[in-house]
Image 1 (tube, rainbow, N blue to C red):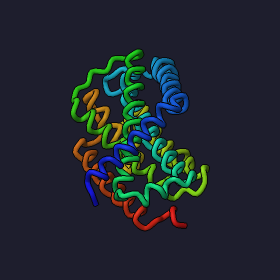
Image 2 (tube, rainbow, N blue to C red; image 1 turned 180 degrees about the horizontal axis):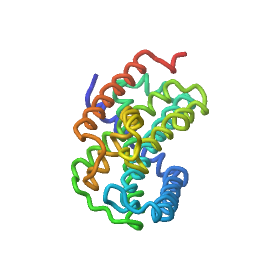
Image 3 (cartoon, rainbow, N blue to C red; image 1 turned 60 degrees about the horizontal axis):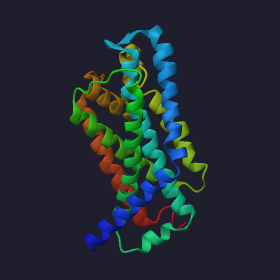
Length: 257
């Protein structure tokens, strides 16, 4: 298949995703900004005063990386699942499938859109965080690479959710009953060293724990997990989920039914 055509097709999908995010900015940008501001005020400011410090950092400073990562994860996932399911529901997905581009291009284009929204919201939340605390990035490469890989992972996960979704309610089940609990239990608001040994072991099965802690390490230089393990888990998820997305499109799952 012509590489040039695939590049043009991918650019078109990404442009569509960016325009979509900016066109409905009241729904895509404002809500996470308000939500994260409330988190900083309630958890960081009000509750944080009673907690004091955690791992040698002011509590507000400690939770800031986790809140940034949480916003990246939820918005990357939400952008792809709503966009791709909207394409299915609007019956214009078929136009992409019969166009001269590969299924991998369709996946990459939508994932790129999710990553761009996730990074945009992450940057916005970072700016908001700077009004409440100081963030001195200790390891820039780790910070950027971890947030990028995490955004890709959850964009791919959102794509899979959209493939299997048959109605609009289906695209909210996973974020509500899976993604949100895993995020709250992923060390956003606490160090797992505070947990009993059994629950520390259980927490290690949560992939979001590795993303949050690796990102926190990039900014603050402290982590509850091994950074190399975090990279390994993220890379495995990227490869497995991308392969799954392409195979689902190749087989017409959720499309030809």
